[in-house]
Length: 471
Ligand SMILES: [Zn+2]
Image (cartoon, rainbow, N blue to C red; front, side):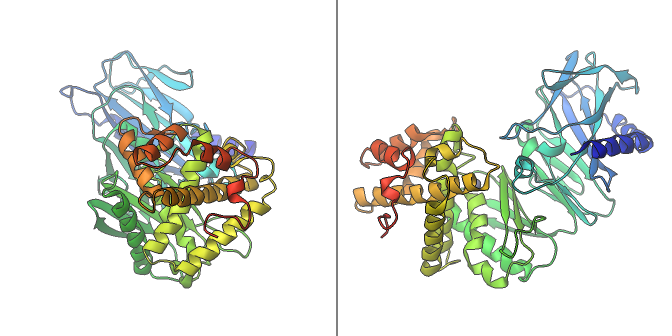
């Protein structure tokens, strides 16, 4: 955001003061009495300025006995946080409360009483390779919007009762859907931990839902495409059910998958992008996508993002140095899933893996940066991203082939991942040691030396051209 825009937003905030007061009056009239044991929280999101994509957020905390309460923005993987504009807080009679920033959090001196807080948030999407857009799922358009909790909500650092309510009223006639259960425009988020990952969509989204393996899969799709919504949802469901069957169950009861146009056009080539946060997934596809590509490798984006439910979320990388595994294995398995779900043929798989191998060997960083180090570098650099994803894919493929070879086909990479998932319950993190331990528990050979040669050595011999594991 540039300075002129910040100024514009500030002006819009001041001009919008009258409408804010109406919102505030609505917020402050809310109360459930003092019977609640744990503080109770309600958010209300309204449109402050459509032209500048500014959302007004009002929060009400009822039943907190603490003398002060702090509210903090959720930090994304790259450390970016939402920046509230014009933060104010008020007591039950509308009197202004002292609010200050301390240690990166907003601290409100509520004196043990109920209070409301409000602020504006400006939402923008910039270049697809900028760090901002990598974490930005929120979009505010004339006919529809999607909002991810972490992009707009300051989160209280006090225990609050389960069932956090978020009212989303962007335009009066817009119908809403969400990654959490909802009634009309009110979303009920199970707990604070879930709040940053809760996504709502409203306006011109067409909604489809199906129950797969005990989980509710909801698709929200917008705009016109060369394929029908039903055809696309069918591909989504085939991929999702294939992945759930790999693990036997799914980590979450409900998923909202949003399919929308990619705002950034990548030349003549089909350009797409996916992001996954908890039960919220967004697929930004190129509007020029041909119908035939529904049965081709671009659908790996669905398989990739959904597979992160296990490898990425249930099994989070212990550090950036393990991203080669999180992204590489997910990348590799996503094409495997497409093949198993008959979305792509064996030939499509083969040509894709050849393209990945060629791009890896042509990567200017391939001779200077190991696959294991790629994730520790600048993820705003396209070549470095490719090194991580392509190198990670090839490493995963080599590990899968090695595991199968060592065990006569008895143990696969998926088996090791499943064992890591079982072992990790509670800790939710994964690293090279947990991978090696899971492989050895399944009876595979010690792979420590092989992993070192594969991902921690420059120009790894197991990935030399024409000596690839499958050739
Ligand atoms: Zn990924």
